[in-house]
Length: 318
Length: 316
Image 1: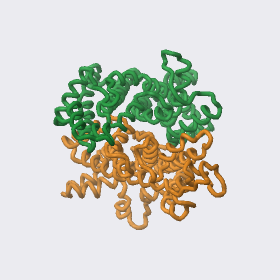
Image 2: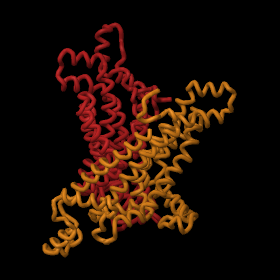
Image 3: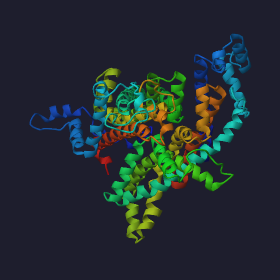
Image 4: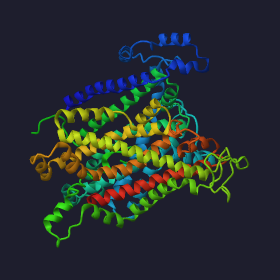
């Protein structure tokens, strides 16, 4: 298994090269470069040419890409074309907020979907089940930004219970930090919670019909033990796959939510970069998003082994 | 895949193909006229007919299509008509859903906005599905290097969060409705391709396909006449659910200012433009948002019902 995971880890490298190459080439082939954007109305051909030379935009694309990649592996992600701040430092400064938001959203998902999914599978065709199914249907259909607006309006503006804008770093105050992130977390997490609830329900229904569950029951084990110790662990395997994939969706979804709640995370950073066509910033944003997504998928492979010891990647069957 | 789920394959009728589609005809001719067999599609429609939620969802979807088609007739005002006296007016007899900060009728904008949503949802899903089907079916049929090459390409394709990919593509191409369609179609290809490949791999092993190959049928005939029709069930279910996703993503991109551009009315853009006035005038943001929600709910209910009808074993 170790070999498999190492192989998986090293396979990430060509994937990153593929992604960044495509994005890099396409970005640079676009009409209208950053010099045009920066100079805007006061466009001056000589000045634009000087800026292009300074940014290296006058060199062939592959040369630019190779140079950029060489710098990336050395931790030099370039500087923002507009703020002149180092991209790597900016990404590192903004990433913790987005990661916290994603982790909180995942936690929220598990907190709601595991009990809801299990309960509706254990008590199928009851009000619990119908309630969970309705929640799931509504949850997957409501756009996160609309839900965010509704939460913002209800709990922030009308009831005044929670702050609707801004952010307090975790290092300053845990309580305030969580208060600021509660609404964005719910807005971001509800849709994925709904999907996970359905999945856990379906997979629990399948597992509780298995013979080993019947055996556990016939041994006289308490129902709660049967569900928790025997059924749930196996039912969670497909849920873990989806949870891993959801990290990617959450990183993507965080863009809108961060914008809506004015959170200075990597999503807002990316949107600003994209709007300004700030290439180093765009590439830094894309690279870090892809890294998070890929590492989450790798993490899923690790968790599998814990949940199901029979899974032994790449080893011959005994 | 679910709406805004950007599709996982979790909800697909993977086993929906236990009985090949289109074989009903052959069975019928073998069974003779007296022995009536029910075609798989007819059986599906019967099951679908019995599902109230699916019918309700289908009703919503049809209503949205109808509203989009008849927008010119049913909208009380033009989507860009400004009524300065009605600025930020609450819902009233004259402006049923109120008016926005420029005095434009919210109801009329919601009605016209359905055109963009329907157009983007349906067209991007169709193009995404066509390319996905092509890649999936070719990978499954030819196998070997072709399969490997296509699937590795798909792996890179999905190595990137979907919303992010749609965002980057639409920014690269520039904000416009057509570019959003292209971005969404590109993003949807991998899921369809994977699903079609998976289904086609099992369909390919069926005797009737092997028989067609054995009698020397040409590749395109085997692919189009024998394999493709039997891969359509999951494609249709996925497609229905993807229309819902596409509507949400289009609204999301427009909400960020990267999709449909004014003055073209779009639910997402209206939500963005009106959100700053929301504290005192909640209706101007709530109604466009609610419309997105109800439309997506409709497509999801229909898609779920269709999935259950295609493979009742999945309905547990």
